Amino acid sequence: MKKGRFRYLKIFGGILFILLTVLIINHCTKETTAPMDKASLIPLPAKIAPSKGAFRLKRGTVIFVSNNSDEAFRVGDYLSDFLHTATGYQLPVKATNKTKGKKDIFLFLSKNQEELGKEGYVLRVTPEMISITAYQPAGLFYGTQTLRQLLPYEIEKKSVQRVSWLVPAGTITDKPEYAYRGAMLDVARHFFPPEDVKAYIDMLAFFKINMLHLHLSDDQGWRIEIKSWPKLTEIGGSTEVGSGKGGFYTREEYKDLVNYAADRFITIIPEIDMPGHTNAALASYGVLNCDNKPRKLYTGTDVGFSTLCTSKDTVYSFIDDVMRELAAMTPGSWIHIGGDEAHATPMKEYIPFIERTQEMVWAHKKYVIGWDEIANATIDKSTVIQFWDNNKNTLKGVRQGAKVIMSPASRTYLDMQYDSTCNLGLHWSGYVEVDKAYDWDPATLVPGVEKENILGIESPLWTETITNMKDLEYMAFPRLAGHAEIGWTPASERKWDNYKIRLGNFASRFNAMGINFYHSPLIQWNDE
Ligand code: IFG
Picture 1 (tube, rainbow, N blue to C red):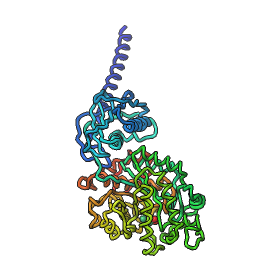
Picture 2 (tube, helix red, strand yellow):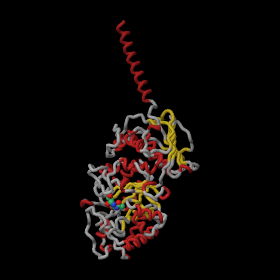
Picture 3 (spheres, rainbow, N blue to C red):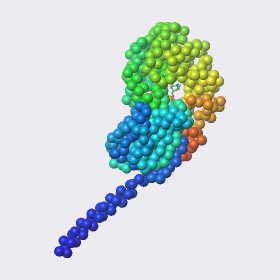
Picture 4 (tube, rainbow, N blue to C red):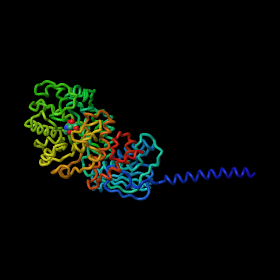
């Protein structure tokens, strides 16, 4: 008898032990996560007010959207799709005019929060609910990007993870410093297919970058189909630096990229570089040359040797056709006309060329952006100067009332080598380590170019030496994250010593996203 009773006691004791263990584990993992103001967020939000506890995202969570906006609904769908990959949850997106719920997410457009502007938002997290309020849909989207960074880094993984999806409680009130926060990708020196550009767009959106400038033409390649001048891609799109097969975007592929970017609140800005950097066009059509002879295709990396024939009317009808077709594919406000390094174009020809091209862009209802050399011409105050290397040119632009996009090569050129050991990139503008890319203020860098003259910042990635996505990621990250913070966060709130810690904590996110980032020795990388 005794033996039987003892056996029951043992079983009972074992069950009790298991129950206690489960309870303890559950309690330990329950609702505990670092407080909101200890989260590593890039770009740093304007205001973070932590509070107690955390929201746990669950299978049954619903995403409610204020029922007066399709765009808000699209953000809800984007968030639901994004969360599905790593959680396995299929969160429904429903319309509501409720403001409170249990264990739910609310996305609200609020007409009386004008102070948030086009891209600002308020993100509130309590153990009961998450709400993102914004004045415009872009603000809702940026609130979801911050929410993404408040979740455990595993949320970025491409397969279902067994993690407690906790979001620390508190309130974030946020809006950007500059309206124009851009990246440029040179798809002319080396062509990048649409899937690569979309992957880059996803990375840009994660850091709240809202402009993608595509450098579509240069000496080595013409990358956009122009139906009225088909040889531009048949011939001009047939090669690239190093004599690879090159490539180009059909109109449909380009429109698909425009829509993909727009769904992530990114505007695509196409650049046709003129009158220099035009050998691909000059090789496609002899009539674009003064001697009517087509040039040979060029696959080297020299610059400044080519020019459209600025005295021929054919050239201007060519430009007009290109601008018309490009404008029809580009819902954004701007077309970039290049204008850089026109060393083969005498200044007395360059100036009228730029002024005439400026008019043609307006005729197709777009505004002009150009590299800083175009400020040697008479430009309209609606024309934007992209500062890359010449203070004097840029000041000429400011004096004509133009706004400036700050792209100093010595700080923002993502093709600059990190240091002399970097086997990708160039260093004509110096080596650019992660601290040099971050620790500067666009509003004080160029004497005479003040904050009110600046539209924003843009990070060009020239691809003479970059041939694939892994190399692109290596050069762009982590420096582009710092540029995104410069564009979003006030200079007074940006400190290198604080940023470098947040950046180090991004290692696990970069890894989860599959981004091949450069492990700068200046950073304590916390790869989990
Ligand atoms: N300058 C040229 C680019 C490219 C770049 C490489 C501008 C505006 C050097 N023009 O930057 O075409 O060759 O770093």
